[in-house]
Image 1 (cartoon, one colour):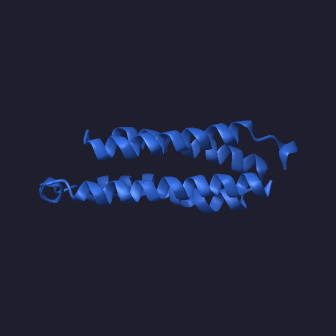
Image 2 (tube, helix red, strand yellow):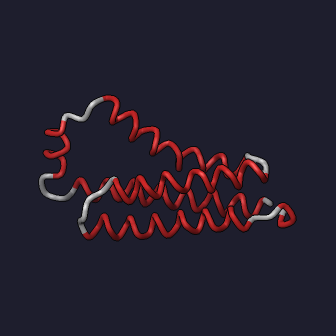
Image 3 (cartoon, helix red, strand yellow):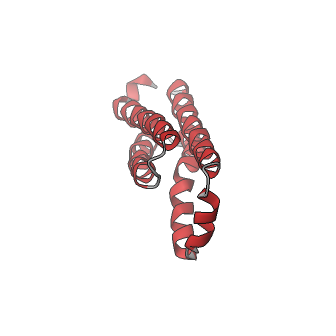
Length: 122
């Protein structure tokens, strides 16, 4: 069981690093920061983004501490909104599409790993 828990947690870490660097590189696009400042995003929208970003952050720890059944379910459920967030929350720049492809592929791997994880593999 520890091997699968470590694998899932490591995949979530990989997803988070990609999400962070996607944003950092996105800030380097000319005019990106100015556009973000000009949007005057509401606190509600910022809270929603914060909650969506907290899902993969929490899964890093939860993948290691939850018991089998809850762990499987949490990884499957957490993967879906995170994939939707990545697919719907970005832009069409080459760097974003590159990172988003890697993130979505990794999250599909997480979901499949959790889906196939049986109690007898523990």
